[in-house]
Length: 115
Image 1: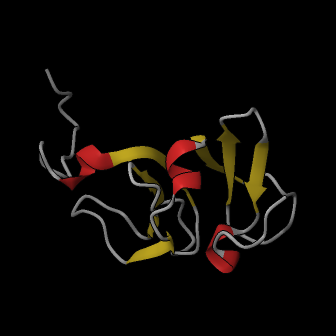
Image 2 (image 1 turned 60 degrees about the horizontal axis):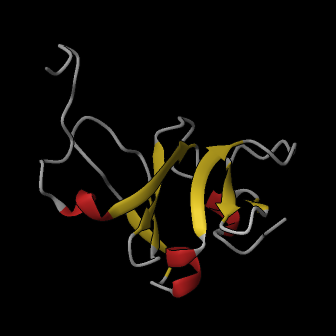
């Protein structure tokens, strides 16, 4: 049974069945933490900004499909981990060997500023 306040933004059987991980936060869309980063089963990474009850908007590819993200990124999470005053959230990645990586200010830097 679904809760009364549920808003379905993708139907069952949609392309979202191929999403391997999701991270939410403020990744450069607007002032709200309504953006979603997706790790797909093939290792592609995409970002959607300004997600709302009408669905996903403004898709941006962060990383082409590749074996590293497909086979070794195990968990992704969004948050403000770098301690800067920049309003962009960071992406935390747990890798299969136990390493943790933070990609700082994802909205401004994409996956280029790794710590």
